[in-house]
Image 1 (cartoon, helix red, strand yellow):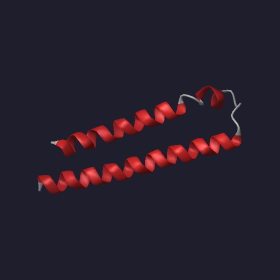
Image 2 (cartoon, one colour):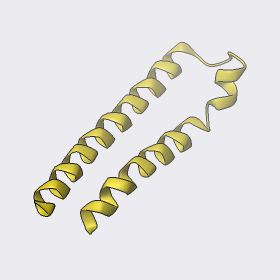
Image 3 (cartoon, rainbow, N blue to C red):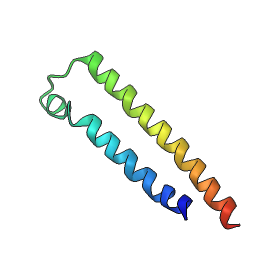
Image 4 (cartoon, rainbow, N blue to C red):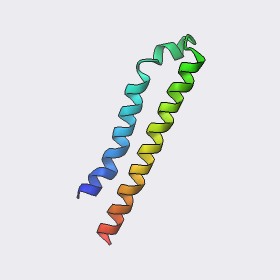
Length: 69
């Protein structure tokens, strides 16, 4: 049961993390007033969050499959 909750909860957590990491710079991106280095730094954070989320999701799906079978 815990792995099923993890499979459902990890994508929700990743989306929330991405939302909260982008709220600070959202208006600067809309008005094109963001510095290029800050944009690259934000992109690195987004990619790191996505990579960790994908890794955690693959692990939880693997554990769910192994416990069900």
